[in-house]
Image (cartoon, rainbow, N blue to C red; front, side, top):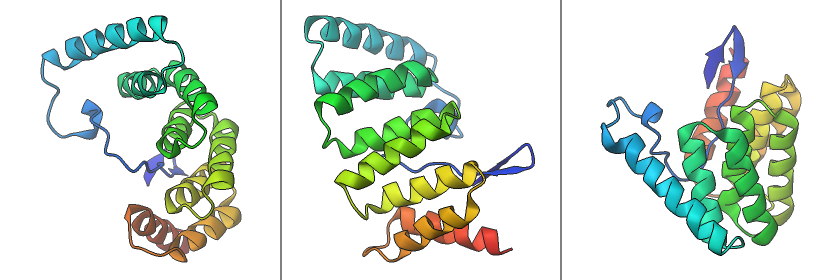
Length: 170
């Protein structure tokens, strides 16, 4: 959870860690952005040749998110999910991109779509709660966070849901 402008801001959780330089304490290596640019050019070229290549659509969406170009990232991730609706990680990344540009309605729709395919997915449940909380719907957010804690396992979403619920009690 982060506090922004005096309002609680709950960050979304994705199951893979982000190699974005802002997520590390170390400053990025000088070649990081150059390498990212080269990879972006490669992916765009590959997609020109095969526009329905889901692997490259997903990779370009992730790369654009890492660059902070969330709106364009969302367009590639949307296309990825159109072609591969079972792409669980695609839903998480798309919701994260929408949340980054505060397109909360779109992020909420994305998590609800994911839950229609992957019912009771702890990451989707946690993220939906975070999205709702960021829109000020705390009671509904709590409902989804409690659902996370009812799921088997003890992953990162369980930990984040527990922390969110404890934070709201204080």
